[in-house]
Image (tube, rainbow, N blue to C red; front, side):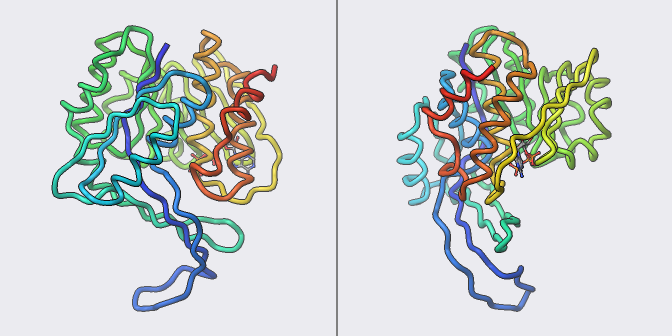
Length: 293
Ligand code: ATP
């Protein structure tokens, strides 16, 4: 089985500040590392590091950030399809972090929202029935809908993490096999039962340090988070989702509590280190995690 991730890629620039600046204010901050980020890239990297063959399609602009993104992605065990969009800037995130590790994030999305339905669907050309489509909320309505419909017609398994949450997801749930939502998203969408009623057979509700629930029409299982000293939670949800999907796919089973335990172990590593891509578990760490019962 292969995973096909269609989503965004961005360069993350973190700055630690005592407090958020008010409009009109000018404050000092402490620069952190520049890191590869974007929910699409995060999930693709983690799927690939877990050992699941993964193709990643994303858009970049025409600038030096695009070159930096490309060179960082080349270092990952991924097949990458980067679509250059003329006249736009590559996407980037400014992560404002306070000394306790809480984040406020500003992300640009001109490149991601410029990925066309045609380019997204073309990236699925090599997929076969049973392969996994992985989507998030950064693409346009048309592109998200087109990729989901195409994957559905091809008999792929479809997975959506509706973050950032967009109004158009409401119409698309009947095309989704697995949804990953955090507490805030679940509440806005009307709860996990609403997603099940809309036709999503498996819903994973992540609960931060409280763990995650696997909710299906026949049951609801809570898997606890792995205790750790939280340094930076950026990317925890992406790491969790990708590890859970890879764990199940590599064993040839539907999502199960073991997959969520593997995901919790991987996410705990991410949470206990600063950064996004730089904080993700390595291939070797994931190989050890995926052996756990
Ligand atoms: P983010 O937006 O920060 O990437 P999210 O809101 O999508 O995350 P969360 O529910 O916060 O997702 O976290 C996903 C998983 O990461 C949790 O289910 C848990 O396993 C792990 N996790 C998050 N925070 C902590 C923590 N403080 N300690 C241990 N594990 C954590």
